[in-house]
Length: 460
Image 1 (cartoon, rainbow, N blue to C red):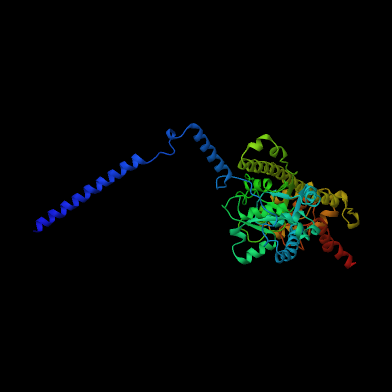
Image 2 (cartoon, rainbow, N blue to C red):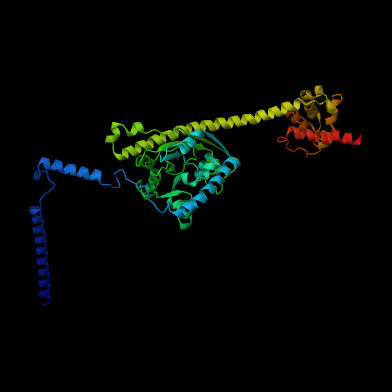
């Protein structure tokens, strides 16, 4: 019985498997036999295929997608929250306060050398009403804005918060929590998200500010320099959208700076003082030949964005070469000025009339003979005599005058320095072998008179 049941079970399994294979084969045949090949060329004429192709192209070009570009209209009242009364009150207080503090820091505790400043003032103050303005610059340090912007504007302009710039900042850096979000909104900063493309809300907010005739400052590189400001990278496509999608073509003014890498080095928590920053402001960038050409009417929106960004990037790179050259010339000029100042001080010291002090001018210029005699005596001295007392007791063969007066308080090593620099050093007021390279000539003469001549006058 058990064997018969197993045989019947196997028989039913085999029948079920055969039936399954038959149904599968029958279904496949039916699908292959009755399925119409809609997209096959043999079912449509060439005219129908042509109309389908046109419809696909129209659908691809007209509908926005992540891979296509189009002009997105932005109204002037796009973001009511930023223009609310509360934020306008905060901006009226925070923007002038922070702007003037940065202005004093850059022009008072540091040195800013600006070339072409009148171009920025003319574009900012004398542009037509409701004419938008875009300023573009390289991005070196995290404090480029507001430090550079504040250093270029006079305090009276910084007090007008309504007409000052709007700028963009990454939301993961400046808008990570409600406190920082409120602060950066109060200083006219708009959030942008990395990787969300050029049609995100932050870019739309910037275009809405341009449509009202505002001023937007942007860093076309998209992020800070990777090499400490040595080079300027290519500009991103977003700046092209700001230029092309605004209701009226804005004024685009480029400027490049160098030296902020010393004010705020990479990894520093606080800015440095006593540094020099050089800023070069260029001419406004013209796009008429690019926008009004026949190729522009036939080109895609993405190519126009790239063309505008490329022109801005090339202009910034050219300005970078010029500003580096100006900074180098300025440093060389400053170094030569310091050397000239030291030489003028030495010349004044040599022209002092030494006769009233008992030091004849004819003996004052006999440094070379004194130095040679000092070297000879130093070479002839034994190790026992080569002590500080030996240096002090050593005199010179010059008769009277300067030689007899200085031998009691000046050792030969300092005299050699005096012969080389034209400075008299009072050894009694300074320790032996102290560094005298930073002493000033007038201070040295004062110490000499106090140590030598005034004592003689007091004893008379």
